[in-house]
Length: 207
Image 1 (tube, rainbow, N blue to C red):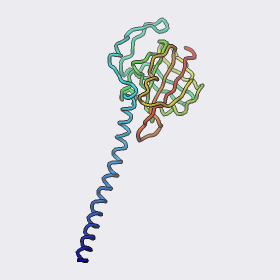
Image 2: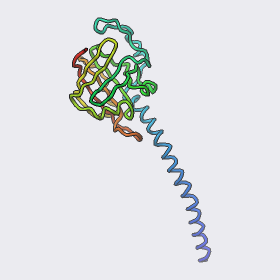
Image 3: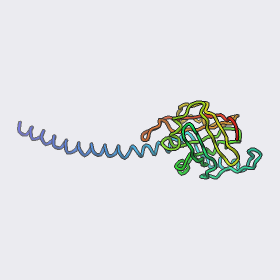
Image 4: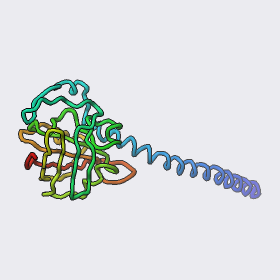
């Protein structure tokens, strides 16, 4: 009876080792695959959770006046301006729309917001590990420039804060000209980003 028990325990021990090692390796392998995928999913959700893109917004205003010039709303994917932040050593193109194609090239302009010169809130978004990684260097009082074909808009950083993905207040219209930039937070390469980093700048002058 004792020998039978010992053989049974030995068998179970070998069986446990045989099962545990493959399961352990499967868990490690799954984590290595899941982490980059989670980062990609989090990145995609980060912008869709804050900005619900409505294609009809693209057609709400096709022609308008800025500085007494007739202007046309940029097409999705079109580069129409350049963002420059000297204190963060950042110079990057601004593209119409916030899709993956635009954010891979530079920063995206939320089509539901206004363009510089229209007298309201201009909203820009970018990836935290690429174009907008530089936002972590900003502080109040730093100058931000948006160069367009119809003038260069100089802004001064007035507020920097962290909020949640469901907070849509950064995209809301304003009565005065301002620039709002946001990205995922924290500034990490992989893993979930449960918060948003927002930088608000007020217009100083038009050159």
